[in-house]
Structures are given as C-alpha cells and as structure tokens.
Image (cartoon, rainbow, N blue to C red; front, side):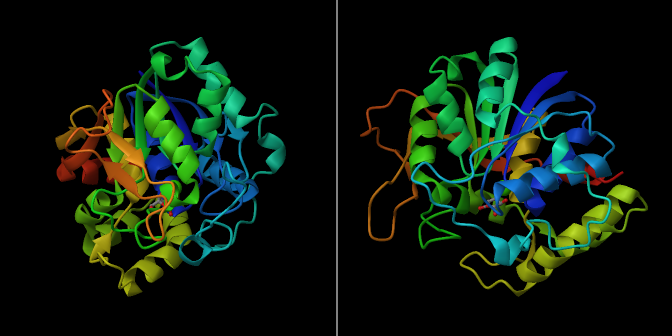
Length: 314
Ligand code: BDR
Ligand code: CA
C-alpha cells in the first residue's frame, strides 16, 4: 500500500481530500497533522476527527501543529469555509480533542518519515508552516520522502487571498519559501489556476452529494455554506462548477497515472513586494540557478477524478 502522511488545515476541500484518500484501497494513511489556515488549529483538529468519525477511521492518529505562520500571523478563510472551518453545520456528537495525540505534528512528521525511509508521500493541503519547521528540525527529511504533493501557489500570478497570492502560500510565505527551496525531493504542485481550470460541473456535485450514504449526508451538511459562497463568486477565475482544490493534490498522491500533463521548472516564492508577497515564482529561464525542478500539474484524468470523488462518499 502507498503510505501517506497528510498535513491539513481542515476546511471543506481538505475534508474532501481526506475522504478521497480514505476510500482508496491502495492507500494507508499513517497520520494526519494539523496546522492553522482556513480556521484556528484547534478547529482543524476537531474537523479532522469529525471526518475520521464520519468514515469510521478514528484509529488514524491526528496531531496538532503550528497555530500561526513562521512570522506569527494567521490569515484565515472563515468567510468561505465557515467560522469552524466546516461550514458551521451542527456537530453534535463530534469527538473530543482528547483524541488528539500528545506528540506535536512537527515531531510526528519527522518521526514517521524516519521510521519509514523512502516510503512516505507527504501531502500538504494547507499553509506549509509544519513542513518548514520539520525540515529545520531534520534537514535529512526531504531525502527520505517518496514524494511531496502540495496544493498551493500559482502560476499566472492570479491570487485568491491577495492580488497575487494563493491562500496556502500567502498565509505563510516564509514557510512556502523554505519548503520549495529545501525539500529537494520529487515534488508535485496543484496550483490555484490549474485547480480552477479543472472544475467539476455543479450537476456532478448534485449527483455526488445525492448518493445514499452517511458519508454523502455528512458532506452535504459541511459543504452547504462554501458551495453557496462558490456559486456567488465573481473572482478572477470564477466558479462555473465545483473546485475541490486539495483533492487534486491528494488524487495525484493516490494514483501515479492521475497527472496527464505537467511542466517541470524550478520554483520559489516572492517574500517582498507591494502586491506580490506570497506569489509563486516559476523560473522558466533558469535564472534562479536551481537544479531542483518541481512538477507543476497542468492536466489530469478528470474521469478518474470523478470516480475517486464518487468513491469517497460511498
Ligand atoms: C487552498 O486554500 C484553502 O482555502 C483551501 O483549503 C485550499 O487548500 C486554496 O487556495
Ligand atoms: Ca486546505
């Protein structure tokens, strides 16, 4: 089985990505680490437990990580994901935070990867604070990963949080910089524009949520708020369908043949600039003089994606 370690800021699309992986028969999730982002890290922990409860997988260990960026800031995305990160839906019967492991998320990442050298794929669908701290704790970590899959960054300087900044990178630009420069391992990026160009139509969404299962009913409940927000969105790329950003990075980690077209370039992150702090830099001309190149996802097998998404709620 593929061994995954998943780092999330469990908003709604993180929940969808986790459920996609839990439904994949070829995958074992070794742990889920939580970080600030869409909502406060305590809510993220609770949300992950709620997702695991809905999927009857509460045996998977969950770890709490950084509450703020490297510089001590939390941006947040409550207007889209709800105050609690999962659409402020009723959560009676949610598991308590006593189920969260005592070990910190950053230590857990270092430990789990070292216990399984060469075998773990790390999937990060959140601000990269935990990953940045982990490589500072253990610089040998990237060399022991099988792969790194990130939802974040942008390729056309289109932002969703600042003019030029995608949420996960703009929430902690220093962490994104550290990860893109210090994780010299096989790295896949599901960037913001690519996810928007790969939307699932709303009628697919209806069929997806309409499945007769407890998981589908759980998803319909937590997804309602952000779905309504997405339907009114008039952002730069617009939403003509449903964009489960984090699920693209997860699907790439789950299935090696999911990505059908990609570019390979050195990448980095802008740390200063009036409008560009947090923007991803794609070095198409080699001026950064970096040997490491990330795989930037351009096209994926959408039929496969639909199947994986459907299976996630069955
Ligand atoms: C990213 O930001 C968050 O709101 C989503 O969960 C996703 O990880 C998209 O920019
Ligand atoms: Ca996320």
